[in-house]
Length: 379
Ligand SMILES: Cc1cc2nc3c(=O)[nH]c(=O)nc-3n(C[C@H](O)[C@H](O)[C@H](O)COP(=O)(O)OP(=O)(O)OC[C@H]3O[C@@H](n4cnc5c(N)ncnc54)[C@H](O)[C@@H]3O)c2cc1C
Image (cartoon, rainbow, N blue to C red; front, side):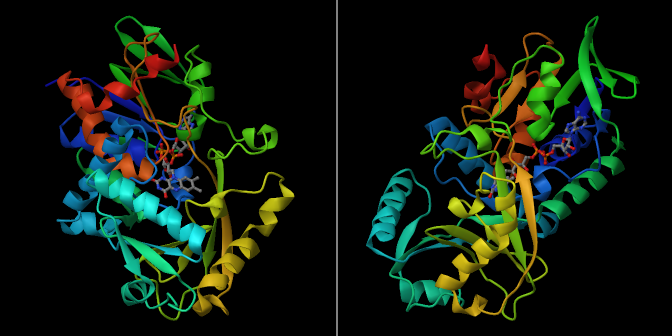
């Protein structure tokens, strides 16, 4: 087992997870965060741990393993502070959305994922906020859950710090340079930090940060929403969420309608957004102001209990979104000590990736689960 110094760039869920996994293995770790930990995408996320719509198979398996990692964590009190395995109910409101759920459930169930079709009445038993009069039928994904990312990042960094990791906020990194067998991390203020290994977990800033060191890892950038061809339905990098005021009766489950998602929070509010069109920020900046009313209107159409629930705030986040939609995890060819870790679905994947990456760094053991996700695929 190596004891070399590792510098981690980025204090989101991925950077915090790797810092904690390395510190737990007694590796000397320094984490450099440009602003404050947990202020990037991990703070503006729907935070739904799931493996739906994940293709190809290697990526589906990575995500199902990610979900399984949360269930293992939740066997302990600390993990239960982060992962709320309440399950997800998806509601069909018409024949087309019901047929879509048939297809999703058949596909996932055939691959061993827990998914079943249920009646509107069964859905209402799972969460009384569901009005069986407004649902045609539903699907139930009992293994899914949501993650309290703020608490998780704080806990991971506390644990890492207690195990000896150094956590430095307000330390933006400008570039990486070779330095003999080591890698030099150059901060924006000119300070240089030498490391045996560096993990770049800078989220949506990854492409620009690596470009400064002539390394190519293409992401779908925030600007793409302005230039996107009509009909291109891939995720936009920018996504929006609305937080409601506290509900009289808190949500019990994650819920999806055909055009939005809702999930509970630790404070009895609901986060509106989700995987459907509702999470996509309109393409103009002005459109962002309409996001709260748009999402709450959609919720009210299906859930009468939201009739008098106000939106308290709207959040806009930028997804770290590799150009091919898949995780990037591995050492770069140009700087062999520099490991890149960037992914969408980073909430689902964080604990699993943290363990795999720590294993690759410390034990010099390539994780077969990551073979399909190396940065070399971008040339
Ligand atoms: C609207 C929205 C909804 C989402 N929904 C889901 C979901 O339901 N399920 C799911 O699994 N995933 C979801 N995601 C994706 C998920 O949130 C991200 O994949 C995950 O949070 C990424 O974590 P991260 O640590 O890589 O990035 P971040 O949380 O962005 O952290 C990166 C950190 O790096 C720092 N940094 C950047 N540049 C530098 C630099 N030069 N020097 C030092 N530090 C730097 C940043 O300040 C930031 O703190 C969603 C994302 C969005 C935006």
